[in-house]
Length: 79
Image 1 (cartoon, helix red, strand yellow):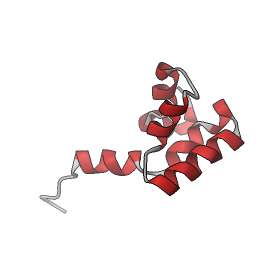
Image 2: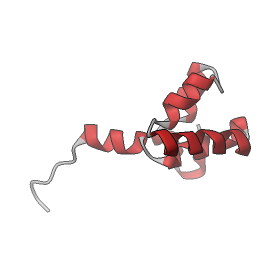
Image 3: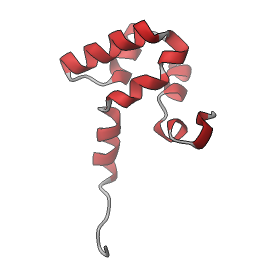
Image 4: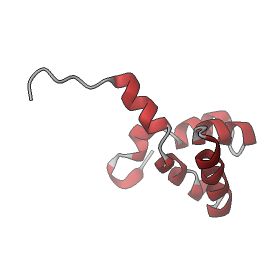
């Protein structure tokens, strides 16, 4: 379909608001803690990143790496 261009900002926003973001945290912080973050995100409408950052579940650099949607979607899930 010619002429259709993705709205990059909107796409990023949708990824940030997705519950899928929490799945990459579970191996690093445990299922229960990740589920707690997911529940809070669903309840408050805040992003997984905001809540994880506030709770300091990982160092900032580790959090950014874990929540990188490009890395999350690479085959094999490798960093």
